[in-house]
Length: 322
Ligand SMILES: [Zn+2]
Image (cartoon, rainbow, N blue to C red):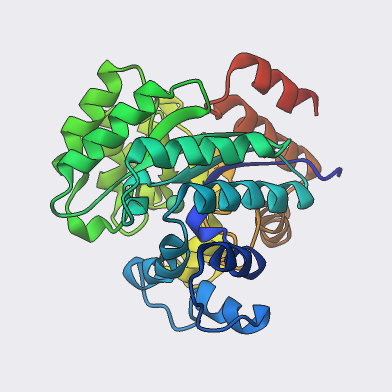
């Protein structure tokens, strides 16, 4: 198989390599705990004793703290794409939450402009998905994310998402955000069925999500599996990330076959390549070995990803030809 991968679920702040962190910290005059790449990796990777999603999310503090200026955001976005290109990725949808990058005075609009500038510097075909956040009291910031997504829709931004800890409230607390997104014609994916159960997936579908981030726990409810299959709502699966956050204890427990056998459209993604010490190529390989996937299965997973990407028709054609 040629190296030709697609990653639809990748958080930019979970993809900051030690080399990138060191370069950006130098640019920004920020002191790092260490400038040794190997040692720094221990700050950027999820600890082995990570218990759940909340623990996992702590790993993002350092990369987010580095990405608080236009130059830093542009540089990180550019470098993440170059890392992907080196791994054989031909198309990526890179996501991040603009509201986390306003600590030093940037507006969300500035943040997105800077990321778009970084996108243009790399020849990789890619687009941005803007994440809203599940926080207790950030409705205004989330609505601003929707507004900025609308402004840059189809100009490098292709969709919205909501990320963060599902403990900070069920998805219906954020219904107004997705209502606004629907009214503005912005496609969106929702993180669901990861820390929370199958019902969170059903709610995300009912809210109008056209894809689901993870969604693996939909296997806990046959009616949710049927809903996904009937409505052709694809899942953005990220197996290693689920092992890190203890959704599953071993890869053998990962319900890939059950999802596929129930007619659910699935795609394979990295989620956070540096945090989880993986990439989309590795995710494909470990699944191939674990579940004895054929080349035809792998090809189907790639075709699924091309079909359900938020890219325009010309880009989809390009991906499929590759
Ligand atoms: Zn994610």
